[in-house]
Length: 276
Image (cartoon, rainbow, N blue to C red; front, top):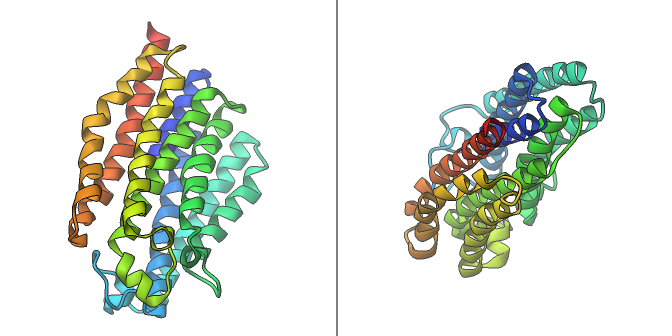
């Protein structure tokens, strides 16, 4: 989920003939460190709240007792600090000073997902923030820090990769729905209910691919992205059909692969358009 928006945003910058490998690498470091940090922060906050006491998904450090809560919190803060350093270097190189408050808001959003007195992830807003930060901010920020401007490719990529990232979170929350409901964690999946949440997951994947069609008139190579549709069917079919929630665990990996595949084929389409 961290790699895909940076690849897609860099592809949009390449479409503007402004790709910068150093700035792309820094953007990737920021995205990766924030994602790792938010996973540690989520592990810590859910663990101390008792949300993970009856967990369906993979082992968690705090909830299982594999690590002390303070150690997990320190790991999260370390990742956020390193992300801030990489972000500062990116700001200096790109002179995009607006990125400073945006970066700070990303760190606050990462911690506030399940941390603090009123975590927004417990109120059904996690999907909104994932869409904003793993889609809009990550892609558009990557493009702007390289090209200094935006194009239609950047906006389509931001929406599409953000939707796939949100679909991953939706699948995760459908898996955890009974336990989350029991402990009062009102994720969007809990608020929608099981059947509708599965339909929303399917719609997010479908729209992520449909948006590519807006780019086809100017660049027919964008149709290459649609080659992933058979791969997209596997997670969609699983989410729509299975009742054993443990079978939803592979869907998270499938969505991650799908997002990276979308970004790579998007980049290939941009390069082919420029070469031919």
